[in-house]
Image 1 (tube, rainbow, N blue to C red):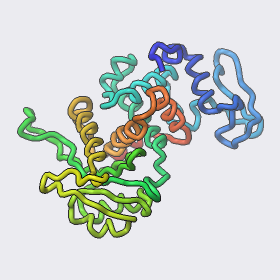
Image 2: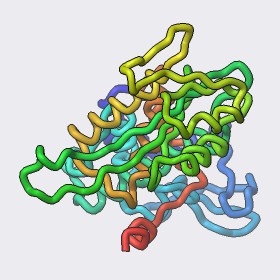
Image 3: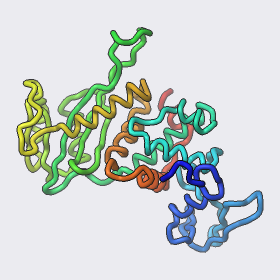
Length: 303
């Protein structure tokens, strides 16, 4: 998708693009009662609005999505979505603030709502792997090194576990401790047990591996990173290299409160690495449907 596309600066074309994405057959569906008996309203004050002839509710293409009740123009929503979809190491809220011409507060919340849609676009309800498929599991610490910081104020490193289906999706989690309980919970609730598990030599994987079709390890403690025949966890290591570059080069700091959304962003981009930026942005746009994120929610969590 070309960044000079009219949908990124023309509000009418942006609205038409979102409507086409949401209702591909051209018939709007009421988000309240799912009726197709819809009347498009007109006039300056009600442009872009629809009236349901059944429940008599009014709605727009924003209703029932993460864009609901947002005063940010639709073309800026689409541009922000495309920028985040196309930026391999992420797009900071300060950068969005400058490029979109909005306040930092608006850019920050806009980015978090897009990340919420990226989580949905990564099929979070479907388990990874399956018969004949390989899943890699690995852990990492994300954060700065104190001796390299000048301020002296350094946030604790975040503990991350990532599951990657080779040739498929990535799914990452922020955990409090790297131990058997947390790693097993992440694996058995998100990976199909008929999968083949590949990990490093951490001892807690010994019992967890028995629950999968097969389990093979590499001795990272001995600087062994592959034993041939696909026995490695280098795919997960590759994911961590991109995530850490995003932290160092773009975000600098990810709070524990919002860590799951940042991880959803990197997961979705990694899972769709074989698609174009335009196709990825289209998936995110579809992921916006049926999700809401109010401004109070993330701040209540931070309180």
